[in-house]
Length: 465
Image (cartoon, rainbow, N blue to C red; front, side, top):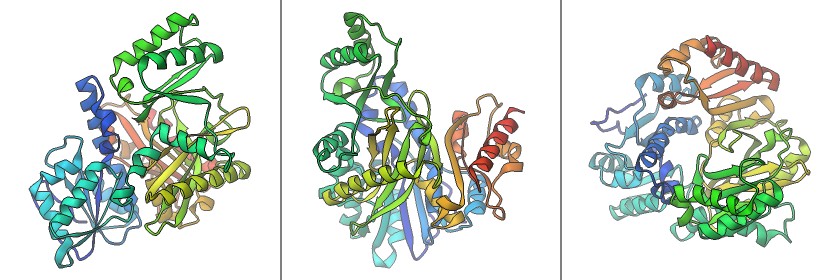
């Protein structure tokens, strides 16, 4: 495996795929609007720690990968990754400085710009992918083209179609599409709600809905990792209207982003947790030629606060009837995205109501927390992995009770249940960086749901000792 210290150039290879981990750029206006500077920097820092999970996107990639990210990966973890996926052609190249806007950092990093020009070789051509198609990403692509390089972006829309990323990836955009589609695709439903601009009116509308329905959900237009979403259940707010308005206003005033972006006020759905954990999900990829590929379906593993933790993927993770509805609705949405010019990965998140209805909650118009799970599963089991393995993932299992948790120490504790390439079962540690946040990120593969759950239970027991 080729790795690069921070002050050296990567080894040249004839064919190179460049990947840019630009997670913060996907929601940069939101991050930039976080009121507290320390909280803003913490959000940027936490996003940098998620970079090494994306290594597994390339479990099946044959060409050399130049992985551009804000944080380096240790030789020990790279060796583990190579053993798991059996690939050697990977170069990690971290930026010398990370502002949160990595594409701008790359433009200002002569070492990386030189590496990109070198990677283009005499053909003057580069294939580049990224976490998301951001305005900063498009600016970097144009800068490379201005230097005489032909840039091919197979997982991104063209510049004149790039509006689709923020529009369909926003809470208001997907809601608008749902309203326009009600007569054509009646299963494409969203929880009752309104889009409002301005915290005063939003607080009044939300208070009225909370008192009437004993619950309400508030969302900013495009948040991140649970930030910008607040769920109020019965007993959380005063039932006197003026007091309720005041409480909600106080919440809005703590963070400036509530006043800068549209606020979505939604009905609180009573969740049926027996259907995909209550949160069914489906992911697609729209190829450059417009062809739509279904990648997988399953259930999202969510916290009580509505924060994404991981995936549960298998053909039986949700019933055939629910699968048909999820896939059909998702495919309809994919057709609308494709016709508008979007290209690349996206998913559709649902919530299953106790009333028997499925509601679309949002679409992440980028690669997702399940994309790399899908890629690694394909590496182990092939294209039909959803019938051969039961998969559980978790990006943020709390290991704060351990003293200075690290990749080495946790790997030693979990040695007996780590993934075995012969049996094709076990646990894969998918991040070294997350230990810096006292979190374990993992994917479990079992031949059956029972086996996968047994491995997860055994993991919890081993981590308690």
